[in-house]
Image 1 (cartoon, rainbow, N blue to C red):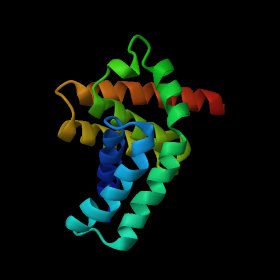
Image 2 (image 1 turned 60 degrees about the vertical axis):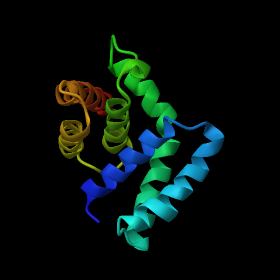
Image 3 (image 1 turned 120 degrees about the vertical axis):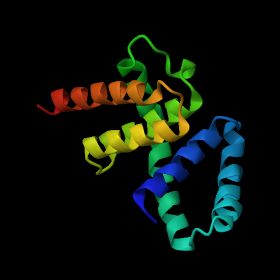
Length: 141
């Protein structure tokens, strides 16, 4: 499975979290892995790769949301569209906590925004992620 496909599944799973109570998420994730992925022809090994990345990502969600709140300046992440917010979460995870080069993570997030987000989403996402990368670079110096 290509990284882009894994990203799309991660985006779907983050999106799914928005519509369920915390105590329902594990059950919804299990349905996703037991029903949806096999129906799409995703192999067991690829399904495991998605699950491993999702588990890492979800552990960082509180930190990611705090960073987004800071870097979005005048925007509250809860007022941003669900798709856009979750694209930002995924890309922020890749930029800060994964081994994905920043330029690749931003480009992939912009592509996801073009496919799934609103008309203004690609530019908005690019701007927020650029600020996150700049903050990361300033911190590392």
